[in-house]
Amino acid sequence: MYLFNDKINMLNVMKSNRFFCNSSLFLSVSCLRRYTSTRRSTIFALSSGTSRSAISVIRISGPNSVEVIRKMTRLNKENIIPRKALLRKIVDPNNGDLLDNGLVLWFPHPHSFTGEDSVELHVHGGIAVVSSIISALQKLPGFRIAEAGEFTKRAYLAGKLDATEVEGLADLLRAETETQRRQAIRQATGELAELYNKWRTSILTCMAHLEAYVDFGEDQDIGHEVLSSLQYAIQSLKSEVGSHLNDNRRGERLRNGVRVAIIGEPNVGKSSLINILSRRNVAIVSPYAGTTRDIVEISLDIGGYPIVLCDTAGLRHSVDPVENEGLRRAREAASTADLVIIVMDVSTGPAKLLQLSTKEMARLECERLNLSFNAEGNYLVLLNKLDLTSSSVSINQSAVSALSCKTGQGLEEFLVDLEKKLAELCANPMQEAPLITSSRQRHHVQVAFRHLEKFLDIIEQQGDLALAGEQLRRSAKQIGSITARGKIDTEEMLDVLFRSFCIGK
Image 1 (spheres, rainbow, N blue to C red):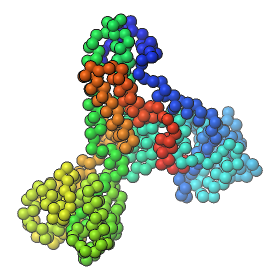
Image 2 (cartoon, rainbow, N blue to C red):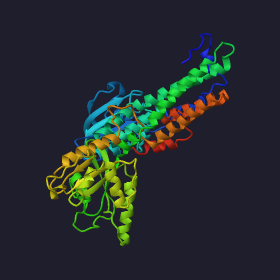
Image 3 (tube, rainbow, N blue to C red):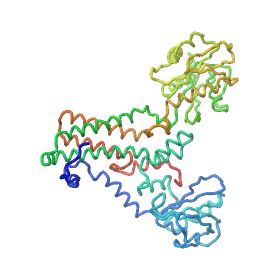
Image 4 (spheres, helix red, strand yellow):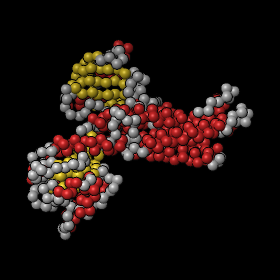
C-alpha cells in the first residue's frame, strides 16, 4: 500500500468535506445505545429452563438490580464482593417470608453480560420455589419479566456483542451436533466478526488514501502510482471476498442441516433405511407397493453432522390421484435436497450396472424412474437387500454402498461413506476459515463485492474518482452492516435478530 508523505495531515483528510466515510454510519447505533442506557426497566427471568431440576438460575439485569440484594437478601451492596457467590436466605421483599436458601452473585456494570448492573440467584429448582421467587421479583418497583432474547439484546446495545456474535450465540443455543457447536462457538467468540472488521478497515484505509490523492495529490507530489496501489489492494480484497462467497453454502448447510432425500422405486427398502438409521420405526414397512405416500422427515446426527432425512414415495406409474401427489412430492424433495440417496434392489438389478461409475449409475436410474438428473448434484447410490444375493457380488465403486437393512450387513461401511459425503457438503469448523452462516450475512457480502467490482471498473476506465470513492464507501457500509457497525435505520433488524432467543437469554 502507498505510504503518505509525512507532510500530509491525516486529521485534515478525515475532516475533509470530500472524505467518503460518513460519520452518520455510526450515529444511529450510538444514539440508540445512549437512549436505551437510561430509560429502561430492570428485567428478570428464569435462565436455566422451565423443567424441574436440582438448581435453577434466575437472572436480573438493569439499573435497580441492587434492590434484589438489599430487599430479598437483606444485604447492602457494599457487603457483597462482585462475582463471588454468597449463600443467603432469600425472602419476600414485602413480608420477609423465607422463600429459599440460595447463592447470590453480584455483577456491577460494565463487567456483566449485559453491561448493566446484574444479579444472579442460584436456587433450588423446584417449580414452587422458582414461582415464589419470580412472584417476589414482580413486587419490586420498576421490575418486569424479560422478553425473549432481551438480555442478549441489551448486551448488544451495550457494545458487548456485535450482530455476528449474537447470531453465533443463538446458533450455539440451538446446536444439536458437535460440528454445529464448533462452528457456533467460533462465531460467538468473534472470529467471523474479526474477518469482516479486517475487510472494512482495509476499505476505509483505501478510502483515506484515495481522498488524499484527490485533495492533496498536486500539492504534496503524490504520484499516480497511488491509484495503481489502490487498484492492487482492492483487487486482492475482491479476490478474498469472492472466495468467501464461493463456499458452496457449506456454513449455512451445517447450521441448518443437510437435506437428504431417499429415492427409489417401490419396495427397494427406503422406509427400512430410514428406520435403521433412526433406530426406531419412523416409517411403515410392508411388502405392498405404495405404502409410503407423503414425505416422512426426521432430524439425525450422523458423525457430528446434522441431517434432515426424508423418506419418499416409491417412484412408479400410478392412476391413483393421492399416490400421484406423493410422487410429485418425492420428485420435489429430490430436486431440493443437498444429497440424494438412490436405493436400488441389488438382488434384481443387472450385474453390469455395478461396473458403471457412480454418476452414470445415478443418471441411468433417474432416467428409468422419470426423475430429473442434475449433473452437478450430489448422489450416493445404495444397493439394498444384500442378504438376497450370492457372496460373489462385488462392488468396485467407492461411492456405491451395499447393505442389508434386514440383517444390518454393510451398515457400518455405508455410514462411513455417508459421513464422508456429509463432510464434503459441510464446513469443517476446526480446519477452515470462518464461513458465512446466514442469508443475511451472504446478502451484505454479495452487495459489498459488487461495489468493489464497480470501483475497479471506474479506476480501469479512468472515471470520476469521486464516484469510485462512493463505491468504496458503500462497500464498507455493507461489510459494517454484517456486524451492525453500518447505519441502522430502524430497530426492525434487531427485533428479528433477537426474537429467536428464549426467555432468560
